[in-house]
Length: 380
Image (cartoon, rainbow, N blue to C red; front, side, top):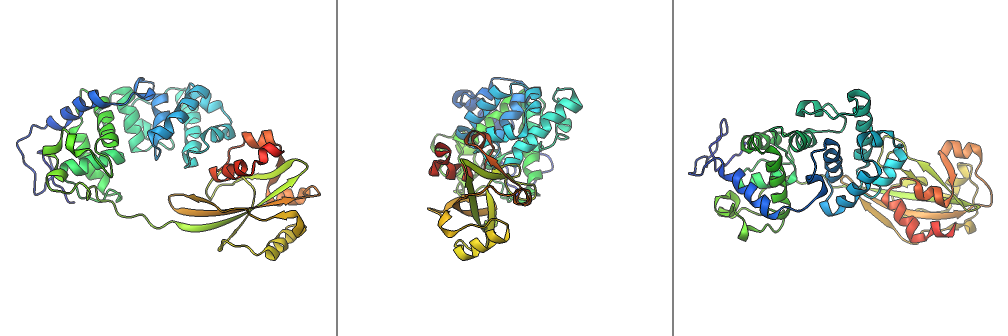
């Protein structure tokens, strides 16, 4: 562990432990800054654990500006955990569409049912109990416990990692699981017992708008003179984060079957990305370009005999980057003069959908982008 600290803390040692600054200086400074600079956000005006949980799930890996309208739509559509638990999963996923990381939405829906069925619709009010909920990790549990129930437990997200690393000179790799214990111990030591909710909001807000990743506002930072990174010229070096593995490329070739004003789509299964969302018949290859003759042969072997004149080749490439995958998709519009047989539909898990039904289906943003570009829905 590489630990450099401005305050004296138990069981934590390093080359820069002592400095004549009261242990209350850091939290008090943050709380004062927060009262002056905090943004007005709807989930900060409530102690309802459901709405707090909803906001935290949406804001994981999502910027506030992007997540805010989703929070408002979900809160309006499902004002209580009972409403969310009773909603069809397709409806939940459709409302989530565009946020990505769809496992969050599936887990959220599952957890809502769990709370209704196992807890009588009442959220657990303790950190340790909240951890038992599906999809609720240490960060989300700490946020709910402190914001809704004023439990003294510190949150630890990317903003908190960054603030603590810079101010206290922590050089532990924040991407390494072992480093969490170091940061969590420090954060738990700093959080005041009489204002755990406000302190957690303050340190996250401070990291979001003051101590930002690329261009932090060090000139007007109230912690400037006691910040290890600033005083040692290490603002751009901290926090330390090892590079993620390069995203692996995938090439999707979609067959968009069309017949009598309807398009054939399928629901994706578990075991891959976009579980529970809808897309078209898919051929995945190791190359971006797919030979037309090879494509027609594969379709024929699958029971869909298509003439080349009925196949409209891709007009453009669609790219979608995930945390671990880089997808390039091409769409082949195929005008069928016959209905797909029951055998083909069953084997390929396809079903015909009208424009109204397609609009209501939850879809990957890549599929939605294609539909909008081609104006398929307008032409049905």
